[in-house]
Length: 401
Image (cartoon, rainbow, N blue to C red; front, side):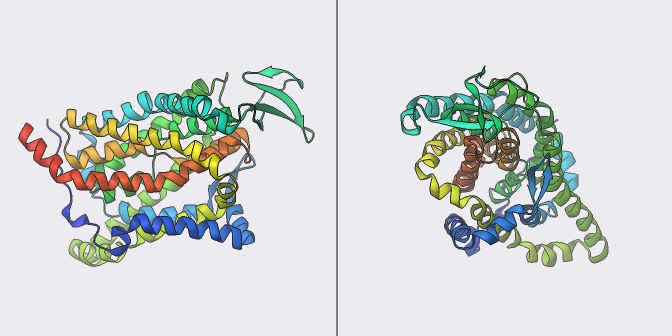
């Protein structure tokens, strides 16, 4: 049985000033966030401290969770869940995203980051520069003991592991590479006029897969005996960033259509929600960079060294996904989210994991913050590439058929 044909939604043109100049607004919000963190550090710290904690580590930022809810709800409420069931029967896109996210992406991220951070940029980072990170959970070694690439030292009365700084950055990149996006990709797919139902199916499948493979791949690629998997952090993240707006969208859609009718829902209610996703996205950026702006300003060149491999990884995975989607003869509406979900990362989980495993001030945590810095501008660029080539994609597909 052939999967349902989904063509790009021509009603999703970036017609508003917010959408047409979204890259500009993103840049302005990054600047505004950094300025807020510098000019009102007390406010930024207070907002950053409003979080749900697991094992004494901040896992879910409450202000960010609120913003993400309003970012995701307008997308979730527009989804016809009958189309989700139909989309789930389309095996090719789902197979493609699983292949990219779990068979390719973690290993290319490791290879690219190791090449640039450990070889090409090592001299700029500091060949002998070191970083102090938390001891692995459950490990109690005497001071002076060598563990992997590090040495156990005593720092302010606490045992820490002293490792090469570039390896700490590498660890953060790995944590990004094994965390496929489960929230923001719904925004990217929507802006790219992708199949919302299929995107939701792929998000759900990748979220469940992440619960199993995140710790296994992380432990393998980090080269440690065991990587303690923050199950509570993963479950909380998926529940708050995906499940909550999904449930709210499903229930409110069902109730509104039952009481007001489908015509009122589409013509009146959805019209009111149009700018909400973009405004919530921009607000999220201001908050994120007010929290982490000081770190970025204090380490401008370090940000560059880390950003290069992350950027190349994003482009590589998107290009590979886009090319494989053509080989599989997917419709554009299915191909766009399949390529975008592989390119983007679940940086919230990566930041939480890096903080829990290595410490808030570690190079690994900084690397995950850089993931936030480049994620939105680069993904917006890829969304525009998808939209510009959507007509050519469908024409080429019909010619091949």
